[in-house]
Length: 141
Image 1 (cartoon, rainbow, N blue to C red):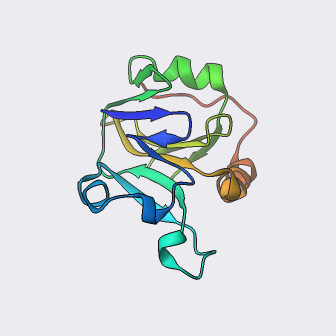
Image 2: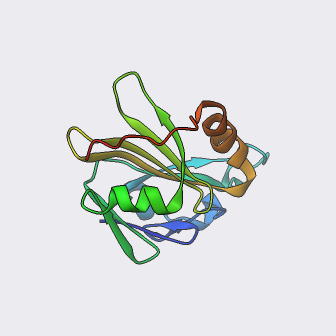
Image 3: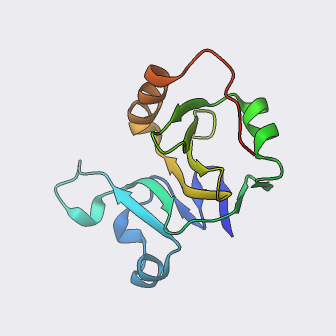
């Protein structure tokens, strides 16, 4: 199960330098990592996004299990930015957690679970604000 705890996903932390990650962690990780490009030396690059490598039907967020039996309540309580794709899949951006969920309600899958660094929050949050509708989203749980 994916475990998000503060700024980490399965034990890898946002802002962690590439040089500080061992090869086994990089190779065997259940998540994909994106590094910044600010540094001239590649090994000094820092993790700016962490995302699930595979789909899942639940994950842990700061100790709370999120799945399709409680997703609707979680969305209502946390009031995320919402974008709906052409395929009727939902993108939820939760700025308070630096979290993006790509959700397929039909198949009851999280297609992607992603956390992002504060340094790139505008890339995720501005896009969500530009597409968010003011009406309540009708969830298809």
